[in-house]
Length: 304
Image 1 (tube, rainbow, N blue to C red):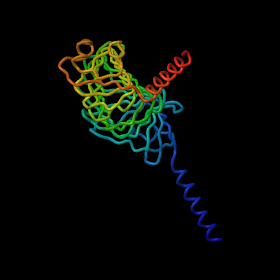
Image 2 (cartoon, helix red, strand yellow):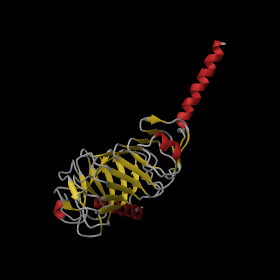
Image 3 (tube, one colour):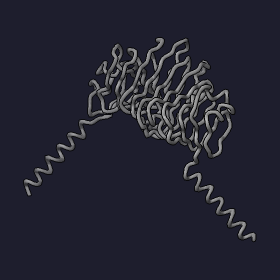
Image 4 (cartoon, rainbow, N blue to C red):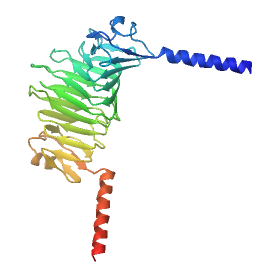
């Protein structure tokens, strides 16, 4: 019994020590690079594994960046959460890849480099817990991109703001993200593009493309909850969606070829394409239609 009690005591002590080692640590200094300064974190230490880090309220620091002047860097903590007034600024060399397990809890990713052609990429994971923003704007004649090589999960919405032919490029394969991509141009009124280049990179939610924005998907979409095109669609694949609206027109269930859609919406469907879009309502919608039909039959039967 004494041995058992001692063993249990040791196990509890080890578990307590392990739990004590993990911590939630807040940013307290703004504008620093994520590796740069131990003083920027509330525990006074450089970021390290076993800890989760937070930017934005309740943290007093609201802005952090990836490592600059390098083609790649990795955030050392287990995760980095960007809260509602927080921002992860992307800086650094062209084609840089910066790895982080990112949690978007209402905050923002912002391409902070105003240099023409500068492409900066995120790898790791992105979990969208609350409606958050991805912004790639410049206010000048700059063509730059944010590449999301990350695996994207979560069910909240992503608002994407673009201008000056800037891009967001999705490279994560078979993302389970089920929120809405709400893509619009910034107040400057310039154009931008959302490019989905890897299979399943859009996830399974909805995609809403605003005026001045181009959507180009390089794989056959297996299913989206809805696709709304007010801007431009490059159609050269075969897509399946539960609901489709192009230029304000809702489409009934069925398959629509590029030629049909291009003829009906020349202002929205980029010329020279191919492929099709098939509209198949979700099972829940079909079930509601079925219930409605049954009720109508019952009413007619009673009337007879």
